[in-house]
Image (cartoon, rainbow, N blue to C red; front, side, top):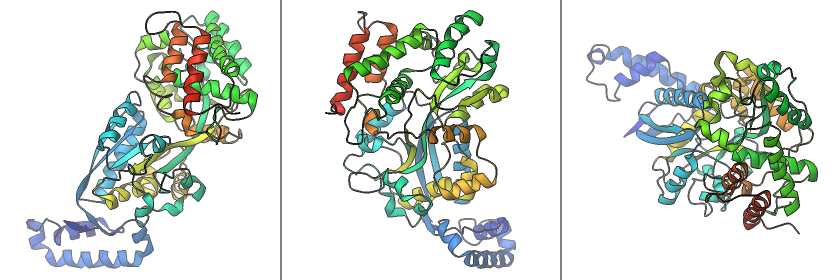
Length: 469
């Protein structure tokens, strides 16, 4: 069944349209106020016609009444914003129902990978940049969004940004919602308890470890990082010394085995100096994600190494103490990279591409939708979204500061091979190597040394990114 929905519609006109033949003809009110309803409907049509281009851009065209499946991962604040945007979309486009599935990142990709293999991925999906290579290598998993450009306003994005999301066929596999990079966030209250300033250099951070242990106790740490965080920090550490990305644009791994060993030894040193907890200590808490960690919430973990788009969930977790979380500029000893934060994609198998595009356009470009979505996925690349949020003063100061810290650091190129499934994942190289190195033993219980960790990680890197000559 087709339904005409006008982009510019007064609430009274919406009622009139319902009375005029969208399934509410049995209403007693409709029977007694038909003339008034018709007049209101005509007025609404006149208003919409006057809106012209605005209405067209808003997707005010025939659409199919349908149910769209959608999923995403994130923290509680992202879930709340996205669910609110979905609810508002359903109000604006009656007849379209969105069935949403969402959760934390832990184990998320494992579940999604099986969906891609079986072709059961949702109509609309939050996606990672590297998933284009992983799951859309043939260009048949994600819809080419150029085919729905009459509904999804691509003109709001710089072409260079869109080009990052091209698939093997040259199609647009996703919309880059934002660009991002990693930076440090510190709990200033905990540092003050230790009698320290927020670290301005890597040397300051390393020096803070013993002070935390002495003044606050064994359960207090200046920084907490998981296995994937450690891999990124090793990359930043070595890039700071070489000045080039560890995987270059040609797809080659640029570190020697000795340089990689130096990076892993750096992580070992951070543990030894009580700068970061061991993976055994982190795992012992059993937190689903760091924003759920009681140790982070109560200030025992006084620092995180996170995306510039991610502070909202941590600030939300801190509640009344959110203002204690402050951004630190990139340490001069490190060299960061920037990447596509995440994307939204539409399944190539969707039966409702137009309606799926309506949903994306609402969330990414529409003033109403973007105001609700806010900066939960970073500072938006959409010009329309940025203008809406900036005018409303809705760009969170912490997010803006973190984003500026990354972008002002002259970040290096990020190759999506860094997140190849053989490297990143619950049973992949980053998790295995950094966990075993921290525990000091492998899965069998045998000793696991720095040399073994270096050999294993070097082999994993060069298996997907041959060593540079």
